[in-house]
Structure formats: C-alpha cells, structure tokens
Length: 283
Image (cartoon, rainbow, N blue to C red; front, side, top):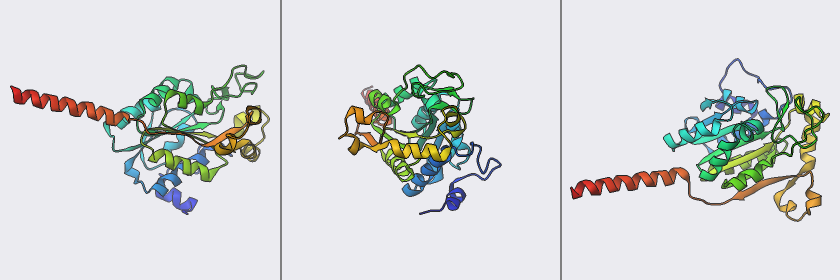
C-alpha cells in the first residue's frame, strides 16, 4: 500500500496551504486520503479527473490535489459539474460537498442530478453542522443537537441524506464514516466505477464546533462514537426498527443499472444528425 508521504507527493500540489487548512482533528483529511487512495487503486491519471466543489470546509479539498479542479459558488457544485461532464464526458468527474452545501442551498441541484443519473461521483462530507461559517445548524443536524444558531437545541428533523438521494433516483448510494477508512476508499472506488450518478455519504466529525457545542469530546471520542453506532447493511437487515434507532447503516445501500444521461443525450444528437443527413439526400 502506498504511504501517506508517497500519496501526497504523487497527487497533491505543493503549496503554502500545507500541512492543511482544516482544524486539528477534522475528519475531512481522512476523506481526502480515502479519495486519493481510491484514485490510486483504480490507476486513474490525474489529467483524467475533474474534482469540483462548492463552498464549505469539505469544499476546500480540491485546493490540495493536482487534478483538474474547480471551486464553485455555494450549493452550485453539481450544476457546474453537470455542465463539465456534458462538455467533457470522457472525464471522471468527482464532486466534494458538505451537508449544508449539498442539502440546503444546493438541495435542488442534488435531487435533479440524482434523477438525471449523470455519470459522476458525489462525496458528501456530513458533519451535521456548518463548520466553516461558525457552527450554524444544517439540514442534517440531529433533533435536539446544539449549534450557534440553535443554542436551545435544534427543533427541526434532519434529512437522511442517503434515503433522500435514493428517493430522488440516484443509481448508486453508499454510506460510511471517517472511522472506517478501508471501507471508505472501497466505496469511493465502487462509486467511481459505477456508470451513473453515485453518492457516497460520509459521516464525519467536526470537533471544533459540533463536538464542542454538543459536548461530544474531541476527535478520538467522536471517532469512537462512529465506530460504536455504525452497523453494516447486512446486519441491519436483521435488526428491528427499535434496535436501529440511533444507528448508522453503512455499506452499499443502492446499486442498479439505469440509462445514463450523457449516453441518452448523445443518442439524441446522433439521431438528429442522421435525420439531417437523410433530409439532405432526399433533396
């Protein structure tokens, strides 16, 4: 297995933002490492990849990597990525986005990307909070949890991101945590290989804001919590709803073959050209 030092040398830009711009103990670096190991395992060349992000802690990830990268506006990563994939369908398009970026201001783009089934991979860093802008509660903040904008506890019910994207039509859905590093890189590999819209939801930790505001401890305690509450899909299938309360079901949750958007678009163009050619011959 490639070492961390070799991974950085092979795939990362060497700039003044190292060692990193995330808070100490943040789980985002674990997810980025998982992505790079997945890319390395698949043997993808750097110029074959377009890495797109929006705004937020997770969206800083493209800053580090020596791929084709695009840092877009808040919530619009999937819109930019869709245009990029249609213009350059040969690229492997990967999107990094957070729970706020993807399911709040970007929620409309998320559900429509799912239903279109365009061939790209979206990694959603779900840390239950807006980490970059001060700890405001997000659409995935658990009911009763605290944030800088819900000091008395969140009264809203959170989104289940994986269930949301499944209902919207994503043809590949997986979930893991930043604790389960081997599963993380394996699921990202499977998502990239999948022909269609793939989502990997990663439950990760924000010790600086979510951990502090909710007395969840530091990074070690939050990682331990992820280990304790995670349950594999096959085991979860044998558990009652009461037993699954408060648990995180991990693994590949959805995997199906559906017509891919770029393929369908190309077919329309092909038919239009054939029709135009036949019309010219008749004239």
